[in-house]
Image (cartoon, rainbow, N blue to C red; front, side, top):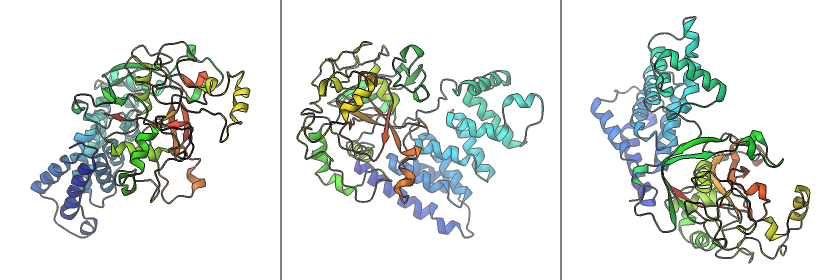
Length: 469
């Protein structure tokens, strides 16, 4: 059973319902009651270990984070430790409980953070004890068991249990904002790499585990269009293996799903998705966006839902960039030089741009008939392929990712119950889009260019593809 399938979610929900009835009922814990026995704790952990679907694990962690029983909070965080490398929700629960009021809950979370080198926990831990260097000159507060447990976990995260080495690592972190390899920030993994489907499914490409070049260097700043503060500094990053769609999802593929029952049952849709959302494309009546063209006119929620029903998810921007830059870290999938014949871009859809001002002025001529050709069928440009074999990564349509533009963390949209003026300009609703589109000039089409858009917008320039990790 695929871990992202509807059947998997239904099975996990039965487990959660059983746990709620036997161990986790909030009302029963607001009254005096006997603590969990050792046998009950073991049963609770075994049941949680049987969960597989990300949605079920998210629900469990959200439920446990504010549960009135410290005993339950501790039991759940200990039970989800096997998930911390695979599920962002488990990592978030660990970090959240670092600020718990109960010692044994905090100690459990701290030990899990240390054993698993959770980089996102480091700042929280440092706020508790202060930097190691201060301990050379004065006694640190708080003192006792808590300080000792936290200090050990910080050393484990840094990979430097010797105080002198740890001090140097902390100085590097303060200066660069980067933690040592093995405890990096901003890239959460939600998969078991050893369990990738084999053979590789039709229409997908295996991106092998390796380091790769991400971001840009000073020699790459080729145009004032770039905002250096938005850029990712060039560095080497490591990603385990993953599978990515060879081409973007097409209108034909998307419409077949959107017109079917899966799109209206909303079982695997994002939990923050507006109620009774209509997943049909906004551009379905515009004949210029043909069946074999990339599926545009869909928002982030649409893409999330489609992919979840197909056992996939959106790529993070680092996954997308690795697939696009290939083994050589190229500026374009085919190499370092722009080739106007290798992709669908502004120069082909309208005319060669004379300047940024001219480009923007021409874009204002877009209407129901201009230009006559917008996107083109996927696979129309054979040169537009990275050396991994992933096609159409730049031009034709931007692609949604699962990365927040400002935090560089996974997307966590939270708009339910909030008025649009409040969330429409909030940082948590800005998604990284990658690759440029049929309306883009050359500088936007580089493999490291970071675009952004509001995640509820349904533009004719943004499509998507899926990954399995």
